[in-house]
Structures are given as structure tokens and as C-alpha cells.
Length: 308
Ligand code: COA
Ligand code: ZN
Image 1: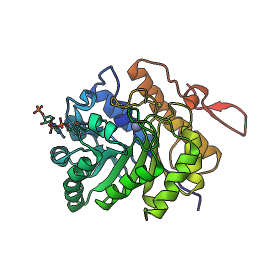
Image 2: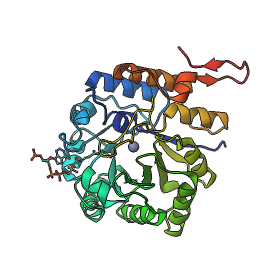
Image 3: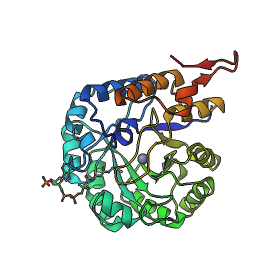
């Protein structure tokens, strides 16, 4: 059996949360449809957070009520508290992500809690989601560095990840929120996670390509056995509380690499490029990702593929 990687799409949530231009609901629904058409099976769709905190995703209730669920596709949403969970439950959500960080400087700005307070706040949310049988993910943002407090040790990132996992998670995702991470840090986090008893299949990484290190970090994580990576079709993304965090790892760049090295992931590069172009158009800018511009490549003919 071919080696398999899970691609966890974050474009509709992380990608759109920081856009200046408001995105119509119909555009979001179409984007979600194109992502599922491309073969993406985990699509983080929106956030049930305070609307004033993230106005771009304030239509979360409407969006989830209107979204036709594709069989076999998981549509997780961000939930910061019981209020968010209740909203999510009312519109048929069955997968959530809670989100803290490695640093108090970041969480106090992002969710107005210290890391310790956030873990206390998430405990009842994850417990309730567990009773409901929902899939549960937890993010450790700023795991590679913080825009407010600087360097973050792998020990600290893993300590928070382990405490989060102990609250009842299917998966803990270490986020390089501002795209400063490098491969030795990735390997360090994985090694320390093993020491802390975090099973490899429960680890995911969320890289931003802010400084061009995202794919190198993916390769490093794969070399030590990690098999789940976040990516954003069209390379959109950034957090309003993380200055300079523009640009998630682009799904098309990740898919190109995985295809070329023979890793199975179930996603069609050509179809991802269709979705990437769709969202770039909707945002009124050219598609700026590497593979978005160059297309794929057919080794049989030497020609670029997937271009309009
Ligand atoms: N859904 C809708 N409204 C919510 C809410 C939720 N899940 N949680 C809180 N609110 C509302 C409250 O009712 C209150 O509204 P009001 O001002 O009209 O009374 C307001 O938001 C503030 O609520 P409070 O409980 O005092 O929260 P807070 O101000 O301490 O903020 C969070 C905490 C976590 C709710 C808020 O910071 C947040 O939603 N952050 C999300 C940030 C984010 O998504 N970042 C990007 C992802 S990395
Ligand atoms: Zn992100």
C-alpha cells in the first residue's frame, strides 16, 4: 500500500479569516464545493467565534446551515467556548477544533486568555464534544515562534500540546503561525512529543510559508513519520492577531510535491488549481502560489499541466 498523507484544508477558515474584502456566502459555498470536488476530505470550514473578533466568518451559522455535506468529507469548525459549541451543534457540526498557543503573549491577544486559562476553558468544550461523538482537534499556535514574545522552545510547544491532548483530542496540530520555523525545530517537536507519549498518528502540522520554509518543514516532518499537514488552496491565509503571517502553505504546492514523490493523498492537482483560481478571482488578485503560476508537470511529455 502506498504511503498516505492526510491533507487538511484550511483555506475557507484560515484563508478567509484575514481578508479585507468581505466574501459573499455563495462564494464560500462554491469554494467549499470545489475543494470537495478536488478530493479534499477534511476541510476546515469556518469559526464559531465572537463575530466582532473575526467579522469575515460572522456568517458561520448561515454557512453551515446551507452547506451540503459531502459523504466522506469532514467539515471541522473552530470553537473557542461553550457558546461556540452550542452554535455549532445547532447547525449540525460534528467536528471541531479548539485553539490555544505556546505563548501567553499570543493567546491573550487572540482569545483573551492565558494558555492555562484557555486549557481550563476548553476542558468542558472538549468533554461535551466527546459526549456528542464529535471529532476533536486542538491547535498549538506559535509553536515555532511568537510575533510578540519571540523564540519558542520545542519543550514548551509539546508541553502545551500534551496538556491539550489530555483533555480529549483526536489530533493535536502544531502551528507555525508566523512562518518562522525550520526543519530542525520540526524534528525536535516530534522527538519531544514522542518523549511526552504523544502518538505519531495524533500529530499534525500547520505551516505558513511566510519565509518559504513550509515544504522543507513538511519534508522534515514526513522523514520522522508525521502524516497530516494543513494547507490552504490558493495559499491564502493569515491570522489578524499574527502580524506578517500571510500565506498558509498552498495546497497546490503540497499536492505537487506529494505527487512527485509518489505519496498517496487522494487530491487532484488539476482540480485544486481550479479551486485556487476560483478563490483568487473572488478575492480580486492573481493566484500567487508557485504551482498556481507554473502549473503541474507531466513527466511523460515534459509539459506543464493544469493551467487554464
Ligand atoms: N460566538 C458568538 N459570540 C460570542 C462567542 C461565540 N463563540 N463567544 C463570545 N461571544 C460574544 C459575547 O457574547 C460577547 O458579546 P457582547 O460584546 O455583545 O456582549 C463578546 O463576544 C465577548 O465575549 P467574552 O465572553 O467576554 O469573550 P472575550 O471578549 O473574552 O473574547 C473569545 C474571547 C475567545 C470569544 C474571542 O476572543 C474570540 O472569539 N476570538 C477568536 C479569535 C480567532 O478566531 N482568531 C483566529 C484563529 S487563530
Ligand atoms: Zn494558520
